[in-house]
Length: 478
Image (cartoon, rainbow, N blue to C red; front, side, top):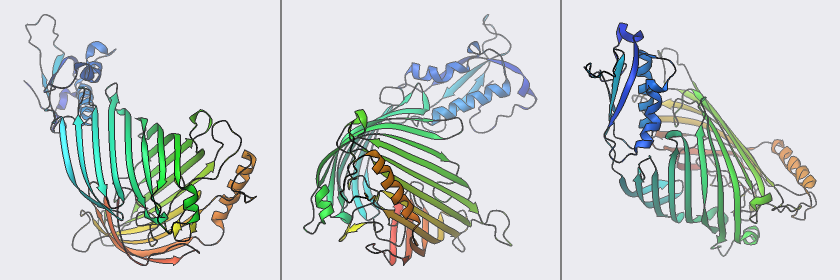
């Protein structure tokens, strides 16, 4: 007798407390998958590797959770089927409580080739992608990606990813990148060549971490004839050597149209300090938090589909001495924050907030931005549709770190701290840049699309507001 358990909760009824021992686990369909990779998943389930026996319900739950983990490697087609059988009663080594587990899966193709076009924020591009799956039989993958577009002139990237000890929550990623990108808001192109290594893991509470090292050679080149003095001053080569840590706690019920839950995210980077070397040095941190609430509507039973979301982002960049030196240089154009555009502070041009030198947005070292959005289902479409009407209000402020002596160089770390706190205090001076508007939101499975009509309400000197329609595509919106 065999009972499929992958299509729902098994009907075990009064046998749920029956003591059982898992005698064997047979995996069928893993022709290209290493035995050692599968053993790390399934051997801990065998009763010979446990201190106490299972009940039938416990055994099925353990097998189900392991199969779920197997699915997350994305190297097998759905469904992955699980069956339970009894061993041959004539086998002298078997006992009446023994059960055998049979897991059947069908491997995905090892080579995936895709090509197409993308339309995003102020950019259109064509791309080609080759993915090699289950490369060495342990759910490793190699992604080769190439694209050409209106803003990213060219980009070539190779990413190798592998799980650690058959655990989908612990992974190592090695990547190499070469790209040329038009930074039209600052009259130049940026060329990047470099690579890095990252280790990511998840905790039992559901939070995710990523720790990585990146080394990259940057070039500010292709300056427009009317490029500003600040852009010209930062033109040329620089090398960044940095360590980055990212932490995410995401409890939202939907990544693009949440009606409940919250998101907390921090990203910290240290570059050039001490043994990291390079020729730029700084500490850079960003924080993002957002939450969503379902809005009850009188006369509508249950979930109305109406939601109110709020978000806050903030970040700072503090210059440090390069290597083991004692003097800090001002931040470079490559490293500063940019703010404004259809995915953060709507109603402003891309990088329209903060310091400008002539027509060029030259970025800032400290920023804060906030948004609130009311999302309402389309009439006659219903709350289950990915379409929403949106009413939004945004605010933001982006500032450059100013040294008190006006020499463009901080003489020591004590001066740097005073300058940092002095600039931080300016965030609260006066009314921030403000905008409001209405729009349409479409939550595609891979990205969120917005078409908004925005109206800048407060625009500071030098900033660039944008009254009218804005189109945005992305996975992270305010």
